[in-house]
Amino acid sequence: MNTNASSSSGTTAAAAAYQTQATENVYFNVTGVDVHFGVVCPHKPRPISQILAKVEKHGLRVQATALPGDHIKSLFIIHARDAREGIAKVIPLKVQCNMAAKDIQSLI
Image (cartoon, rainbow, N blue to C red; front, top):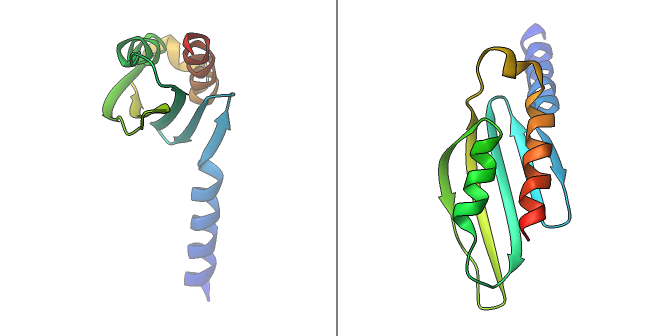
C-alpha cells in the first residue's frame, strides 16, 4: 500500500509542476527547467529569427525548433531550457516565460 501512495503522490507532484499559459497567438508549457513555446501567426515571411531572439533575450537557451505550417498560417514550436544564472533566477521561470510570450506576441 505504501508503494501506491508514494506512486500517486509522485504523479500528483509531477502534474502540479506542469504549467501552461497562453496569450492570443503564443502558448507555453513549463516543466522543471524545460519550456515549450507554440506560436501561431498568419503566413508571411517567417519571423523565426526574431522569435528566437526574444526567447534568448529572456534567459532561455533554444534546444530545438519545428516549423510546421501551411499556406494560410505558420506554426513554430520551440523547446528551450532555462539558462539564467545567479540573481536572474530570483524571477520564477513561469514569470520569465510569460514576459517572453508577450514579447513574441508583439511581433505578430
